Image 1 (cartoon, helix red, strand yellow):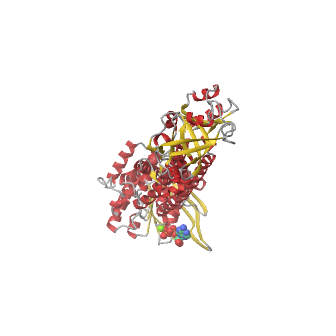
Image 2 (cartoon, helix red, strand yellow):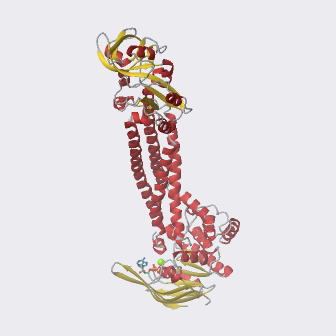
Image 3 (cartoon, each protein chain N blue to C red):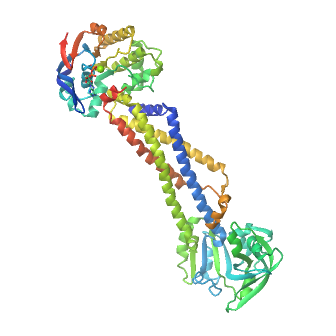
Amino acid sequence: MNHVVQCEKVTKIFEQGLIKVNALTDVDLAIEKAEFICLSGPSGSGKSTLLNMIGGLDTPTSGEVYIDGEEIDELNKSELADLRLHKIGFVFQAYNLIPVLSAQENIEMVMQMQGVSKKERNEKSSAILEEVGLQGMEKRIPPELSGGQQQRVAVARAIVSRPSLVLADEPTANLDSVTANKLIDLMLQMNEIHKTTFIISTHDPMIMQRSKKLVKLHDGRIIDIT
Amino acid sequence: MNSFLLIFSLAWRNLWRNKRRTLVILLAIVLGVWAMIVTAAFMRGMIFQMLEDTVDNLAGHVQIHHSQYLDDPVINNSFDPDSHTISRITHDPRVLMWSDRIRLPAVVLSERETTGITMLGVNPARESKISFIGKSVVEGRFLNSSSDTGIVIGQALADKLETRLGKRIVLMSQDINNEIADRGFRIVGIYDAPLDPTEKAFVFVGKETAAKMVGLKGAISEIVLRLHDTDMVTPLVTEMDQLDHTIDVMSWLEVEPYLELMIQMMDTSMFIWYLIVFLAMAFGIINTLLMAVFERTREFGLFQALGQKPRFILFQVWLEAILMIIVGLLAGNFLSWISVMATGDGIDVSVFARGMEMINMSNIIPFVITFNDLMIANITVAVLGMLTGLYPAWRASRLVPADAITRI
Ligand SMILES: Nc1ncnc2c1ncn2[C@@H]1O[C@H](COP(=O)(O)OP(=O)(O)O)[C@@H](O)[C@H]1O
Ligand SMILES: [Mg+2]
């Protein structure tokens, strides 16, 4: 199996008291290495829920999710954490960074958990900070960075240890269009250079245009793949 | 190791993230620790002072009597101070000093008053080293020798008898034939003891003079001993009491049994006090940490998304609590040390002196910090505090990442 991600009939039902919400219904999706996919759909269509299932942050009500051929439903919490640590990078809409750590420390944090030596961490984090255009800002803590800069640090952190997959949930939603475009440029560039698979959710049409593959969600179902 | 360093710096920085909140809770820990240590030191000081007073108050560490003396303190229940047993005890290397006494109930008559007292016939050289009397004569002088014919009485007794230095008083007691024996003494000294009851109860005369008065030939009523170390009291007493069944060797605690009871009571109440202080503290620690955990819910979700295991999150929050407790303990111990240093000899409790005299205590209570009390206070806070910190930490580690992240 050479799929990085494979979803088979993934269904998620949220129960809030007596009300049941079908956030995802029978989602089938296969994603190959180095793809750059945009997950689009209106608010409430299930984009975040699908990304959470793929990243193992939540478990499907039924159906299976495979990462690099491994069924993640079979993993316990600790194994899931290891899977995320080594194979998946996350970028969220906002508040991606640990506030008490500097930009460089935020980037090195993941490598530190992986047990990478200090020297290697330093080299890699400096290099990636330069790649995302943030040289000179290594020592700044998140409140001292703009929204766009924070998202760049988050992208840098997500890709620095070369994961199989980066999941970005509306990474540009809090950014102005110029900054948003630059962030997409950056992610496309990282996809080209490092062959990292990206899945980005958005409801911004401008970003949908720039993606290589577009998956449209509506009411928890995939209605179109182009 | 890598992870530990990361977790340590996260915990340390998070601790100072909300400085005001951390300082408030630190203050609670510091004050709690301070209250524990200082109260312990004060109570220890009170016990220490009580024991010292008791020892000074003629009891010594160890006492030797005729085996019948305590039941019936009459002249015939006396013993020979030159016997083999006695000299073995007084020559024991653990003994620092000793004093032999003729101790008899007597009646004192002045020109105006009559009252019952205890007459102590002493060897002044030895007695002045072992009991308070050596430093307590405030008017006139202490006795010169065992055959001094003067008498030294307490200030309070002089007032009661309406007599003074240089006047004569008469002592009456029983002699060895159960006849009334009496003798006039000139007051050569007035002493001032820590406690009024002592001043009213005891008069000092020369041992030879007392012996002549009641017809004793060489025998004495008691010997009191002071040892180098209070820890040696029990072993010495146990060993020596078996030597000769006609004499009774006992420790100060047997003489004043309420003291031992008091010590036990203080230990118990100290422990209860620790628990109360700690409960107040624990409440603060739990609240603060739960609040911190709640505020950082999203962050814990993020940590999990980045691949941190639940147990690392648990450890991260726990370490934050532990660091807080360590800082609090250090500051609390330091503050205690400063306050104990600052009080010097002790605190003057003469405002409460009336109450204190009832339990046989003087007015200055020294702070006594023992290693044991320090350890108990610190270990109580450290161990219980760490257990307390575990709950918020556990709550943080139990968050479901997806839920935690959606919460902004
Ligand atoms: N934790 C939850 N509990 C209950 N309902 C939820 C929860 N998360 C999402 N939903 C519901 O599931 C649906 C899909 O949500 P979501 O995946 O967040 O959509 P999107 O990210 O596309 O806006 C929505 O109807 C939302 O209300
Ligand atoms: Mg969403």
